[in-house]
Amino acid sequence: MDRVGVLLLNLGGPDKLEDVGPFLYNLFSDPEIIRLPFSWLQKPLAWLIASRRTQKSQENYKQIGGGSPLRRITEAQGEALKEQLQALGQEANIYVGMRYWHPYTEEAIAQLTQDDIEHLVILPLYPQFSISTSGSSFRLLDKLWREDPKLQRIEYKVIPSWYKEPSYLQAMAELIAQELDQFPNPDSVRVFFSAHGVPKNYVEEAGDPYQQEIEECTALIMQTLNRPNEHTLAYQSRVGPVEWLQPYTDDALEELGAKGVKDLVVVPISFVSEHIETLQEIDIEYRELAEESGIENFRRVPAPNTHPLFIRALADLVLEALKSPSLPLSQVNQMKKKVRIYPPERWEWGLTTSAEVWNGRIAMLGFIALVFELITGRGLLHMIGLL
Image (cartoon, helix red, strand yellow):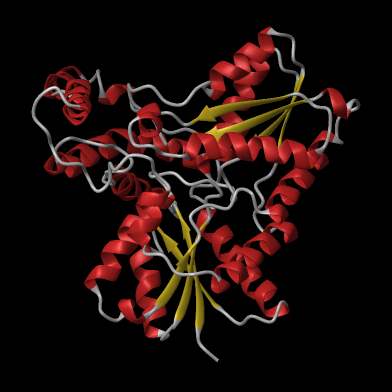
């Protein structure tokens, strides 16, 4: 039989407090996380941001045990997926490739090459596509494939996004229902979807389909849930001075509290594993804000983790992909975007759209802001929080 592999892609997270600084540096070094007009500025800025944010980030990780559980959960998902595929008659090796911490994507690629994998399914653990998550990993993989003749012999299939997968929707609906049923009046509880945000210009300038896919996913989950509860969608984890997708989670919580909402179930819609943004940001920070805003009963839906229906969804995705035609990684990225912005677009002089975009970015960033930050300790970088 042909050797089949499945590459699970995820963000990664620091295993211990000492890893927080290097992890943040890797994160902010990615041009899909902070988009700059000059590539040479990326790493110095990443070092500066990581240096400033490490201590605060470490304090947050201390609140959830001193490190991220993301690697452990992702590896458990891989084991469960392997067993599910075996039960469905498909043998496959599972590889975990993290973008910003161990095991890095490069490590996973080295291992599957050593294992002589012939057919590979690339499955990002992000239900919805964004250029800053799946797109960033696809860009890295495309680079690795172009540089390594051994990889070019592997037939691969890419799953760009999968938020419509029926078993995934059923898993989410089941998890939500379990939390709703803990309330005396389940039908009156507000369902609050909190998605990781992205800068608004990713959607408007770069054609990122993330917002559209999040909104569609929310509607599909509520349709699958099939209950009369009202629901809200908001976006968390914004950083920096630019405008992000709105409404922001903190603002939405305060608004619901002001309207008299007392019972709330929060759904981390863009996350399939517990990590810092569910365990600390939602469970601690947003819970405190909700209570201060007058929301008395705050419950949070767990991430799917190794929920049987969720694992079945991943297995179905793999089996479907193995039967589908192959597409180059670069072409997958282009298909998911409306505007060609990555790889970086060509500079154009004059009153062109491209020039206006670049001029706006330069004005937004500005060397003046950086100098002001270094001198005063406040300004642009002072406004950048923890992802």
